[in-house]
Image 1 (cartoon, rainbow, N blue to C red):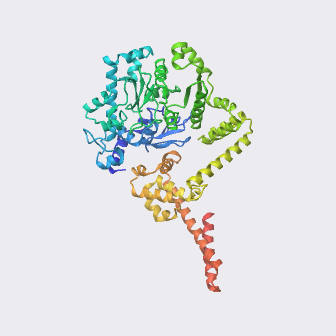
Image 2: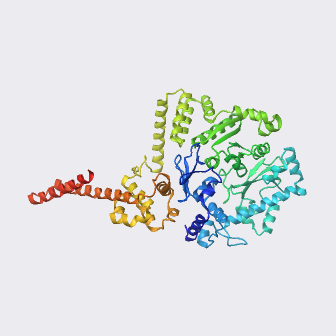
Image 3: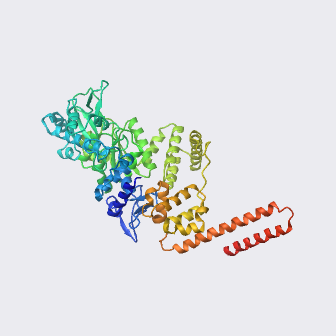
Length: 590
């Protein structure tokens, strides 16, 4: 991390209050010196999530999610650190360092009309221009056929406006020319996945003759597009932007920026597959509908949903493929602590035909009758071969993150599979051991060859470093006691060095994820009030003194066992030293 970005982080933290940011997404309540709420990162109804305004950190006792303002904003919005830094800097009015070191390390290279901004900014600007281009096309004379199609599908003007729908002309270089007039070359258009290049080197618009669906990040920026062919049914019905520096398939959900407010207010997410399904649901008042953007449901999408709601309703076709997709999605959601229901449509029906044809009441009846996620999984397992069912159940339970949920799920699934719970758990243990053995052999990690099995955290290291983190100004006193020399694990020594090399208000920026979690727990999550420094220091001092006495006792005993070569006086000296050491140790213990 450059010095410029470190200074910017400190300025942002000084100008933005973590409580003000968190309460945009979470209903915080004051509880003494902290603010508390149900955790937004896992399924929870109790106020396990707390924010320490003075320290500037959040912590969840349930799932151990923790961090500072930047961690919360990036996790809740599914953003990278760079995106988080840029957005919070803009909100705080902090100017980021755009030096070459910044661009190489955090922001990417700068090109184009304004060399002072990052490459990413150019790509975002190109997408913004493309979205405006498509919107203008839809409103113009050339967009008549697309407007007719949307009218047949019953899309309202409000939905078209809210989702920013557009029309791509049938010309080969309409967008490419628009980008060039704005100062963006073909190479940047190709990097942005807006343009393509043929085998003979010709550059062309990727989207032609299509209804355009802009795909937005949670910050509201257009980062990709989807397109539905109009008229020429010989081409692919739908195409989507390919991966780019802005967009990665499987990381985003269509409609999430529009749906997150409804979900955060308590509505379950309605998860479906297509763009038009999402638009239809929103038009009929289901403001929490989102789509998976033409990919199989991914862990990244689960993470994004879990940032806003703990309940998801899956809307899938009722055929075999739909049930298989629903089973997979259920497993992913349940393993992360979310609850879900599965709404399967009758054969030949979809969201559009149900809502526009059968009516909203029929759709509501389907939702009301939809089974809960675990019940749905149990039904599907009954139709599977016994061995496949046990394998799926075992794999699923092994991935459940919360122990209390894993136990409940294991009990239910064992009953459904006709196994005793003990027999089912024995199979789980055997399966996990086999998977660890195979994985370890492949990677040379614990369980295989090449790396020793890690030991448990040294208790002395933990006590010393807990004090050091809580009272970093006391590091010189600790070093005088020999605390650093008493540290055993490399991790503890690394953390000590970081505490010594950086000021307390900035050190957290240089910690890795594990160190940061430990730091936050010591200072905010599990620590008593910071008013017992001298008592805690005395405890550390006594512990280290006792350790030295024990080591001295061991050393004298070892020397005595080795013998002194028949020198009686030397043996007596050893015995006296051992007796004095044991007496001091005994007196201190009692």
